Amino acid sequence: MLKRFSRLALICAVPLALATPVYSGPTVGLGLSFGFGAGGVQTGIGLRVFSGNRSKSTVGSVGIDYMLPSQTWRGTVGVGYMQNNGYVGLDLGFGLTDGAVSFGLGLGGAATKRRPATGPVALPSLGGGEGEPR
Image (cartoon, rainbow, N blue to C red; front, side):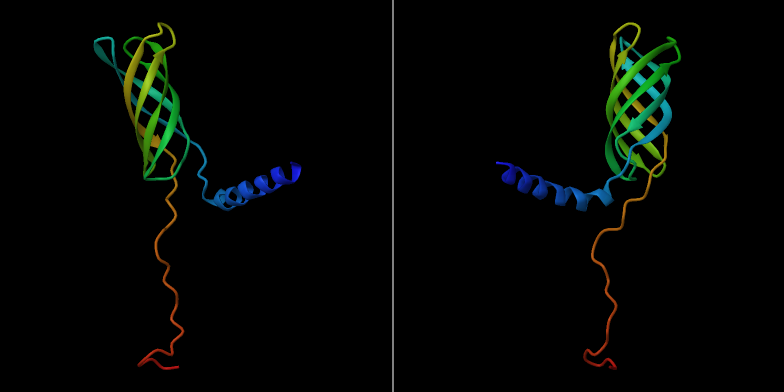
C-alpha cells in the first residue's frame, strides 16, 4: 500500500514541478468601484487581491470597497481581466454594515507581468541545404 502511494505521489509531483516556473503570483490592485443594488448606483474606492499577475489573463479576486455616498464598507469576491498594469473586474459585494448584496464593476491599476512568448521557436540554420554553402 505504501509503495503504491509513493508511486502515485511521484506521478503527481513531476507535472507539478514542471509547471512551477509558469506559475504567476498574486497581485494587488487599487481602483474605482461601482456597486449596483438597492435601486441605485454607488461609487467607491476598491482594493483587490488577484489570484494572478499575468497580463491578458482572467483571474479571481477578493477585495474591499469603501462606498463614498453611503460611507460604508463592502466586501467583494469576483473575477477580473488583467491588462497592461490594470484590471477590469466584475464582482459580488456584501455590505459589511447592513448585509446588503450588490453586483459591482471595478477598474483600476495593478502590477502585471507580460505573458511569456509562446509559439514555434525559430532554430538557427546550420547550412548545408540546397544552394547554401557548407
